[in-house]
Length: 316
Image (cartoon, rainbow, N blue to C red; front, side, top):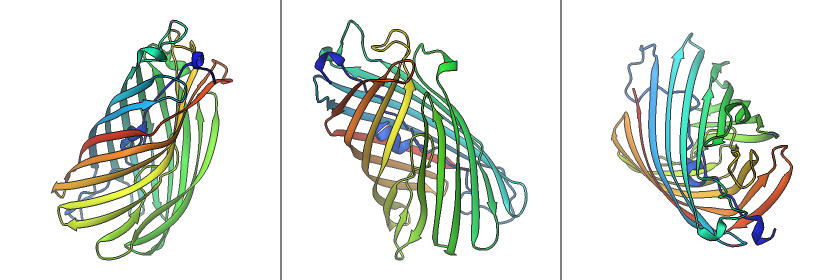
C-alpha cells in the first residue's frame, strides 16, 4: 500500500474482550460468578462490575506516521441459578476509544477516525450435564462504530458454544467454537477452554472471553501470596467497526488484527475486590480499511505497540 492510502487504527476489546490492551481487558465475564466466601446456600443473583483505563502508546505505521489510543472500558454482569444445574446470565460491556493520529496520517483531507464506541450484550446459559461435563451457550449482539456512524450499520451478532470436562475440580479442559456476523463479514473460530492447576500456586487458564474479537487465549498465572498474583499470556485479536461519512473511507469498515502479549500483577483488596495492572505489546499488527460494501481498499502493518492499563473489578 502507498503512503497516500493512509492508515487506520482501532484498538478495542474481551473481551472480552474488545483493541490492543483494550483487547486484553475486554473481558466481559461469561457470567458473574459467586464471590469467594459466598454462602453455599445463597441462590443469587450474583453480580460483577469492572472498569479499566488503557493507554496504547505510539505505534509507527509501515507507510508513514503513527497513532496512539486511550480507552475507557466498562462492564457489568449478573448470573442467576434457576436450578441445581443451570445458570442464566446477562452481561453488558461498553468501550470508548479515543485515537490520536500524527499529522502525516491525515490523508486526502480526512482523518482515519477519532472516537470509536463499542457495545456488547451477551446472554449466556451454563448447564451442568453431570459431575464431569458442563456446557455453555452464549448468544450476543453488539455495536461497533466510529462517532457519527449510523447505528443500523454498526450491528454485530453471533454466539459461542463450549463443552468443558472436569478431570477434577482444579483441572478442567474443554473445546468450543464461535461464529459471528461482524459488519460485512461472517467469521468462525475454534478455541480451547482450560483451567488447569499445574502446582499448588501455578495454573494455566484463558485470560479472555471468546467472542466477537476472537478466541480466549492462554495465560500462565502464579499465586505469589493470598493477595498477590502474577500472570503472563497472549491471544490473537481482531476487531471491526463501521466508519462514519467523515472518515477516510466514508461509511467504510475499519479492522485491526494482531497478537497481544501481556504481563499483569493482581492485588486482591478482599475476596470480592481486585486491582490489576497490565503491561503488554501488540505484535505483528495489521490495519485495514474496507469500503462500504466490505471490499478491501487499504492494508498496512504497524510496528510493535506498547500498552499499559489498570483495571478494578468486584463481585458481590
